[in-house]
Image 1 (cartoon, helix red, strand yellow):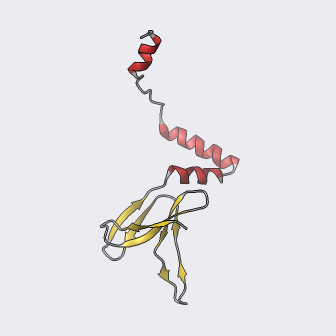
Image 2 (tube, helix red, strand yellow):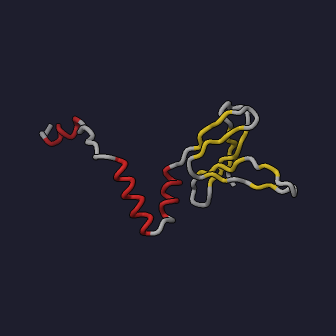
Image 3 (spheres, one colour):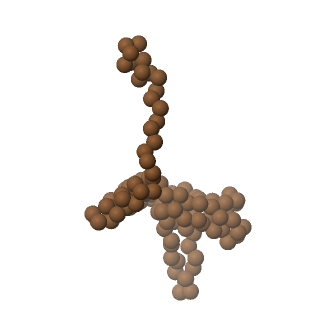
Length: 111
């Protein structure tokens, strides 16, 4: 499995590994804490999270990727998709109009 170290907010400590799941979505596997029986439990983060480094008491944001959002969205049922879409549109406000590139105006004018 491909992975790379992910450092804390100060850049001095490895707090986890960036790994990619079978669909190519980046996830953060946090450095495990030992459980009393001697085993380890990994926390894997896909969505947005603030990660705390106990060594230097700094935090760093793990942000959700577009790929992760798409994967999470694909696993919703129809009712959840409808509700999510409705709330997203309500929070977005009116659509903005981007200015037309000058090249499009010249093409229409024949120039």
